[in-house]
Image 1 (tube, rainbow, N blue to C red):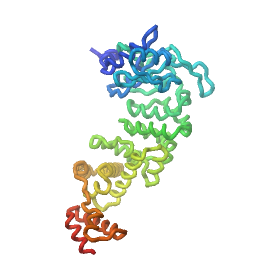
Image 2 (image 1 turned 135 degrees about the vertical axis):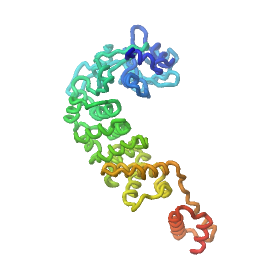
Image 3 (image 1 turned 30 degrees about the vertical axis):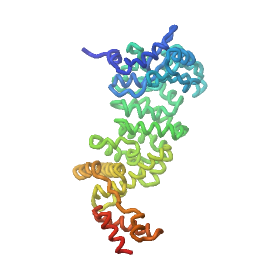
Image 4 (image 1 turned 90 degrees about the vertical axis):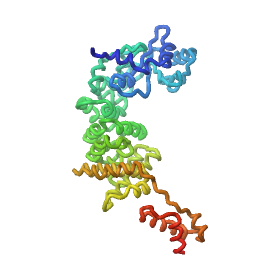
Length: 414
């Protein structure tokens, strides 16, 4: 027997929890309704994890606050002016948003009011597969016929794609990101055409919003296909200010069965955009990346350069000592992808080195400045030079020289 959408939703663990049922019970009074909407419904139907649950309701924000508080829950007016209240129930936060509808339009702007009409609320959303609702009993409500698109993994704008994009130009990137995460087959032609026509709107978005969306896109299963199309449409250059090495990135993602690191945005951005060191800095600035993300990208780029310029393949110990474990792994995967893109396949050699990088202990230089001072060296610049010389000898020995060996050499050099 074929399992229906209702049956799939009724079996969802998140819908059966006491926490969410308490939210439903608190809100649904005096004729008001509440339904889960968007990502939680879509992900459940497609068999994806559900990281968070959003609820739509006919009740006003103030009513939601009052009723949930009276029920012993914790309402927080996180976005109450825009109709959103975060309700904490059994320790889990649910974003509860009052239905909205456009009553007047002024060019790209619309005057929005809270409403009671589920269809009009759905018409304001971005994609058909996101305009799906489920009530507390697991019954699906599909006001725009988005279920078929969802089950067939078609990402289509609701209504006129150009109009949807003009309401928020970030929807251009969301179109590609949602496809990369949930899509299948060819991308929707009408949506692509609208993204191409409206692409200059990306220039008006904040770097933080673009960066947030790009990170999520790079983690998605079909990121390679989505980025290829973005590049062909001129969107990558607008978003990042530079060119993209799409072939290298596709080769990187082909290694996903070997290393899950290839889905990390930092490594993906280095492979895509890191022609020279300045490109790495530009992308970091354009996407407002954190210091930790910047450091990882810089280290990955340096490790890739080291491997590219080396006469042979360095030992694992040398790589992890110079770049750290993650930096060494990133550098190896980036170099591996570059060679694959050029038609070479060093899987046997690089695969073995990757395993070694994962398990080898990171060497620790055993001599400190205090050791040399205790052995009779004077503090100062000469001490630092001596430490560097000893460290070079230690590396050249394959990290085999002991602390005593090094101190003996340091004594002989004085």
